[in-house]
Image (cartoon, rainbow, N blue to C red; front, top):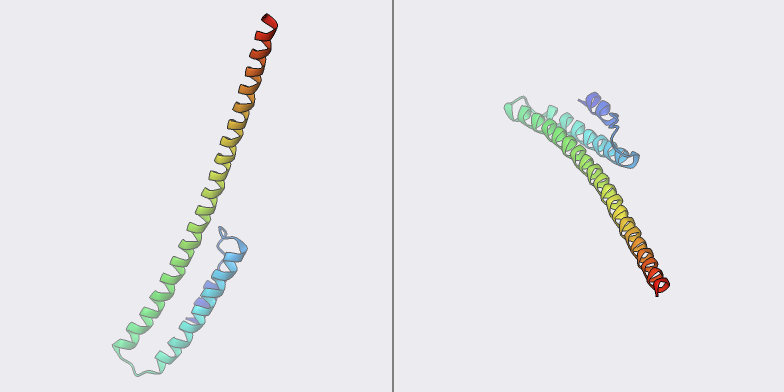
Length: 119
């Protein structure tokens, strides 16, 4: 069990930023250590069905935690991408408004000067 946990702790998830990857790997390494120690303690208990259930539950917890944490990091990445796209759209909109106001002002100035020349 410990070998699997150590191998899992070294898995690189390419879509994460380095800080999140370090936090994620550290959490899994710590959880793996705790679960490994718990497995050793459980193995000292006498052989029965509850022992098997407990070990299975510990493995399930590790897998669920790993999946949920990874999913949350993926969601965080998606939110950051969406925020960046939104900021880009807002910036483009503001630029279009600014350009429109500038062109409208130039047109008005031109019309005023044309009217003044025509008199």
